[in-house]
Length: 176
Image (cartoon, rainbow, N blue to C red; front, side, top):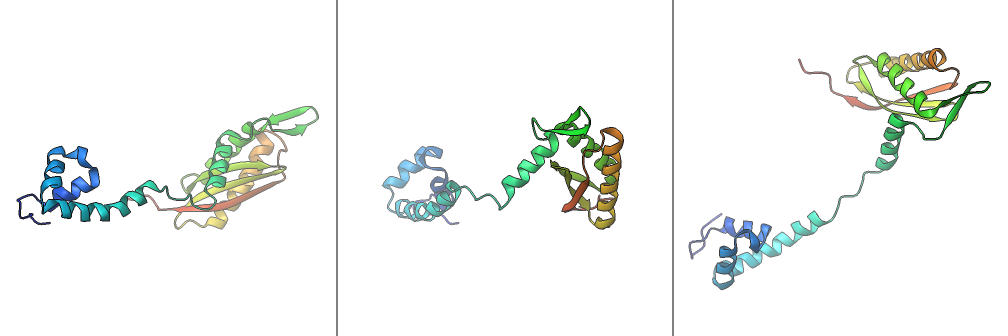
């Protein structure tokens, strides 16, 4: 940026265009009267309109974000008011099933990644895993599936006949 013939710096005018007259009332007053600063500020302000318009427009949510967030929330809290029949007269709340699945799946993953989401649907448990880069995802997913089926049978009862494990993300290995 350069100095204007009146001695003011053009970067100060840019700051005025970006932040508005309240940012520097003295410079704003000067620019209104100065034959050099006035046109330069108008030019900068015109270019800054594009930036203001972009800043005022919220970016669109990525496709599927809302559904993934709902899955994550259900994977922490379960589906309210939903129960799973495990024996005659015995029902287990969905959030209990979700918490057991998260714990068993986290134990099965053990440092090789982490559980991103858990949700139940009829008699199937859906698990989303983030797997550390370099880990055999198929073997880890199978280990999680088998552990969850066994863990549910042992801790809660026959809640699910199927466990669907999906790798939803890959995370970098630890540094060091």
